[in-house]
Length: 155
Image (cartoon, rainbow, N blue to C red; front, top):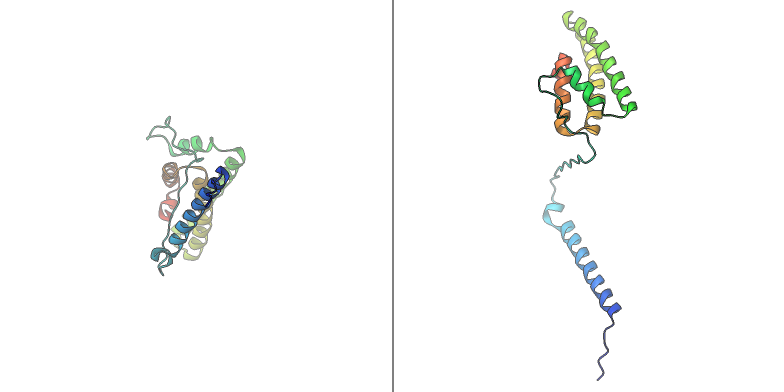
């Protein structure tokens, strides 16, 4: 009986097939595991902060809120800065309307103004989340809340 030598190419293909089989088996095991097929849905939050802007070390904790906002916004591309300036302007214009409606206890007007403020604040928060780390988002939100007291109610 002759024994045929196994070529190096054949060994590599067998090794490749074995690895492929193990990988496939692992994924199949994960997919069919009880936790993967359970009726309860699990929520996973993935936070990736690789390209986000982090905290500025040059700012003091006691800095004015407007200075903090301007310092962080200066790090952004011009088109994003322009968008945020526009949103802040729209927010600033709505504050007197809010104060009048609040003072007059006009619930319909107050509700309408709060809806507008909420939409603008939501747009600002989306930009913050897309461009800055969670620590910076917290600093920016605190700065906004100190500039616009109405936002403290929305946070």
